[in-house]
Structure formats: structure tokens, C-alpha cells
Image (cartoon, rainbow, N blue to C red):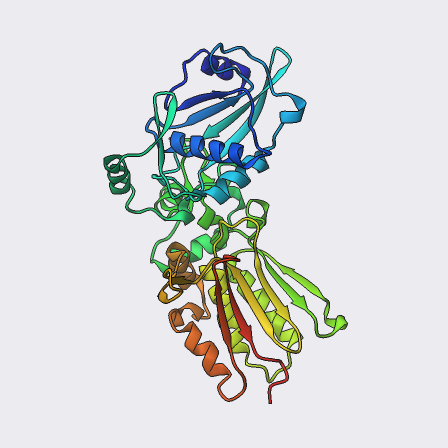
Length: 382
């Protein structure tokens, strides 16, 4: 954003798509909650793109600027919104100097994923004039009706570019559907499949979250938590730590190869591959602080992934399997030449049967840790 555009916004009154703040209180929980509510409310309100302008008095419109102690980074805002909003809201942060004073501008995009919800309290917010309020029943119904095709994977990453996509994978996906992609239909197909997002008509396309996960070899630039970490505690000559990143299918392939190098040939590899496949497919990708982790030692092998896989009621009784990421599943089952995803739904049975008469398999669904773990028996199977 340039200074001319910013000055024109400052001249306007606060409203459903515009909010002024002297500073952000990001060093306390209350401040983070307030920012989350305001961004959710602006995103849920009609009218396209919204803005929060920081460093300007909301009543007088005096340009004060952001003080050095109150400066913030885009990564801070992204982290707050990604972990506290469901689904995450596409935003962008710019800093513009006016009269030698630095002003922060948080641009809030209409990502087509309404209604956005605050995770902490489960509430949906909207702007009424210049104030933030809880959404009413009818307002929620309207937004849900407008967005019944809601998928978290199609949430856009505003800073991304489709240049980072592996077009060989994209071409293979559409080829499996009997469609030949070319320059004339490329834009339409990427948008229709949810691989890309158009935040403004005619503007360069941005990648969606799912588009990057499935079709980009370098998605870690935008999604650093898309990672498999293998910790080998067996022998030092195998290396103690291995980091695997890339598109989801390549991550499964590379993890399989690395584990085959580490484990003895008689170990039931099918069980580990099934556990890794399920972790990659069903993990909670919007938990930015967690990754898939595999710990291998002589007593056990632990495959841990973010997000609970089994829904439980208040009594701790299992009620349903939480099979999130159906958009990813459709893409992966189309692309996977090894047909590993055709057994989806039988993963637990496959894993347990692999160790029948050899050892006990444990499945741990942790609400406290917000994780799901598969614990396999010792590598010294009798």
C-alpha cells in the first residue's frame, strides 16, 4: 500500500471494513483476543477487503505513528490469526511512512471461507458500524448457505505465487481427470480445482493452502510446519535427525525410504507407512507450532501428528473418527501411483494386524496435547 491510498483511508470514518487503532497490545492475552475478534468481525462483514490501521487515533484521526516499543511483525499477526481463527483468515501487513511516522496497515481479505470463528470461545463476530458484535442466528445462516462448499484447504496465502507450483504434478492431476491443461484454460482450471485463488479480478493468482501442500515442492517457504522430523536413536552412523519437506506425496515417499535405511528388513514396514500416510493426510495443518514427528528407538517407534484423530464426548467415549482434509484426500488419491490411499478407513486394522502375535500397538488420542500418536512395538520383534 502506498501513502496516497493510506491517506485516503485515514480520511474515512470507521465502519464495517475500517478500524483505527493507536497501537496493538500483542504482549498480553487480552490484546491478542481483541485483535482476533476485530479481524474476524471485519472478515465476516460484507464489502470486500477490510483494513485495520495502526498508529492513528480513532477519534481525532491524528497520525501518531507506531512507537518503537509497540512495533510488530507480520509473522506475529499471522501466528495469532492462524491459531485463533477457524478457518484462518488471509491477511497482509504493510508499513507506510507518513510525515516521518510509521503506520501499520493490516489488510483483511475476503477469502471466501465465511463465517470465520474465534476458536477460544467458539463465537462468530461481525461489525455493526464501527463496533464489533456477536453474529445473530440469521446472519450465520446466510453465510453458511453462501459457503456450503467451505474447505480449509482452499484458504489463500496472499503472499504466494503460482510460480512455486510443480506444474508436472498439476498436469498429472488434471490428466487423471481426463483434462488437458493449457495456457488458455490454466487459470480457470486452477481456480475451479481450488489450487489457486483470485483475490481480485484479473490480478495474479495466489496459491491456496492445499494447493501448496499437494502441488509445491517448496511449500515450506510459506508453510514451514509442513515437515516430518525423524529422530533416530538407534545408531549414530544412521544420523540422529532427518528433516523431510516438500509436496505431500514426496514427503511420504522420502520418509519411507529413510525409515527403510534405519530399520531392520524384518520390521513390518507396512504398519509404519500406514501410520505416516494417515499422519500426513489427517493432521491439523493450521497448528503452526507442531509438526509430524517420528521417534525410533529400541523400545518403541512413535509417530505423532498434530490434531486429535478420534472425537470423544465429555465422558471420554469415542464417538467418531475426525477425518479432516477431504480436499487433500481427493487430490492425493488421484496422484498416488502406489495406490496407498485406497485403503483409507482401514488404517488401524492394517497397523494392528501387522503386529499380530508380535507386540502391542497403542493409539493415543490426546486432547491436552492436541495430538494423535501411534506407538509401535520394539524393533527387536520376537
